[in-house]
Length: 203
Image (cartoon, rainbow, N blue to C red; front, side, top):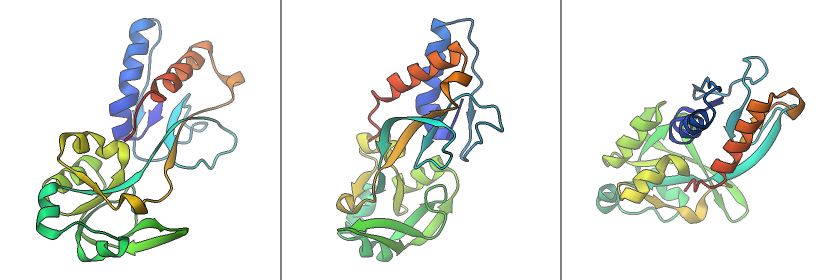
């Protein structure tokens, strides 16, 4: 099975561990990488994908959705103020995670219009934990997926801003080849993943 690194560590690995404990004859090979893995070419049975799917030869079961959120530490917001509209981002220091924003701009929705706002990236990072940590330390604003920020938001280390201007949420899907190509064990694991992930709040 494959998924992105943080999503896999937080959600997929516990599901797999529980499944193996219940069915000791099953083994699991987990591939957590922050790239889109070709299921067919790399021999993957199951994947969790965030975002709109391009490969129509695969079956996708939707289990939820995630938001693209802008956040900052309470200390940063006290020092620099709370942005009230997307254009305000241009006056703030920003931490850019390249996995979500490969270019130096963030996307927002204002009414029915999608807007790309250039950001002043004082730190650019390809690794999610380091980018989140920089935001929590008060370096600047950051844009992440809601499941990535959720623990820091609950602890009070990070606060959401500009929630009224978020882009459309992204779907979370469990993806796999056609059921006819799957073994009974893989099918059971897919069912378990779908059941467990639909109970998760990704916010």
